[in-house]
Image (cartoon, rainbow, N blue to C red; front, side, top):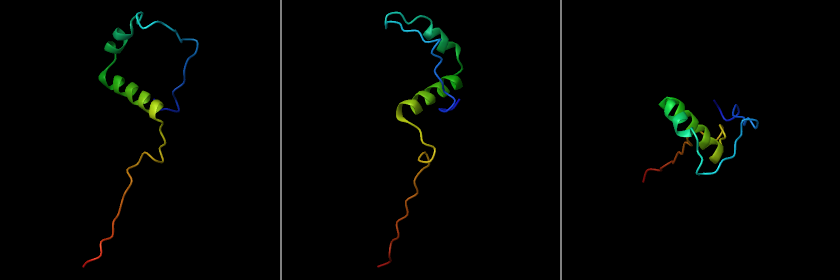
Length: 67
């Protein structure tokens, strides 16, 4: 799943208190490590933003003149 594919299903949204977390732990323990990492990466992209044009490593070149 990519950031563009991520959509919130507002009909499935449930607001609970911090004391009432339900089966969230059981849900994530039932996921594979790859699924957990994919969800983590999606949350990171949502939080910090993601621009594929700036996601590349910037190449820096210094020209050194011989002395």
